[in-house]
Length: 143
Image (cartoon, rainbow, N blue to C red):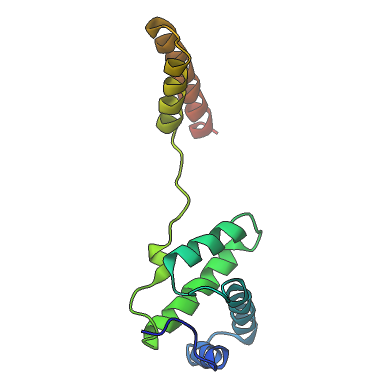
């Protein structure tokens, strides 16, 4: 299993995209995005899920995030098809954890306990917050 892209990687990827009937502008965008990715990972293994995670974190707020993600997906699909890799690192990359209201309540409860609030006060605070969360979700659902 190769750890780095072959020297003619971009040419091979371009040929693969053309063979899949992607338009010239899509091909150009994918190649540009992958060149940026390869530049970012030039001193790392481009097929490591950890490396992919770092890159996803870097581009997370970019307005073109979806396009970059699509480019990476095609890039890794190409790599799978060419047997450069056997597992898609994008699927193994650590995605940012979604924080739920329950996670926030648990963290706040731990904070209140550490600050030595009484059990009754903690219960009241958590109930108030839960009521607010329920109200907010109802507002969102009714919009």
